[in-house]
Image (cartoon, rainbow, N blue to C red):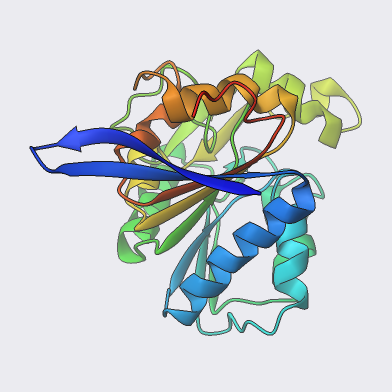
Length: 253
């Protein structure tokens, strides 16, 4: 494992933001590094944890489940949820979170978008209101091969808050491995917007494997552009990127 700081975005004459990049050899090492960040935040009194789904955080959640950290007085908010899936559907993110974390480590309150909401506009307002009432202390992120974070696809405005998203074909292709057939993959999801994510006090992003190589390059060293949604993180004051050597291979630092 090696760690380096990337100077990013100058605001005024003296203040320069630094993104911490931790490059690890294995996913296990990456999960342990992420766990230490969660543990430190918990010990420092973080009350609200923003959580993610997908394959990247699975080992981290295993470590949290087996730890002695108590989340019964803490709050969680999730990045996203598929439209049209009930919480009891094994493909829903509510089900994923129960299976991988909440059943073993319950929080005081755990909030996710309601995939079965009949009124889309009302659900967007409701969930954004929850985020405003519960400012996130530590936000966990993964990243898509097209550099989406949450379900904020390329072209999403940096000012976007919680919204309903029409998923791109590349995202559907990436997620079909979790479903029996590609046609079963939902085409829409609710997601925290990029500005909602940026409101978090601290962010940790984890990425593994060669499919994330261009996304990590764009996130860390590319121009800040809405065509690379994760590039907005260069403007955040406290971001840690944890990636393996395959995902970090194009970085020049």
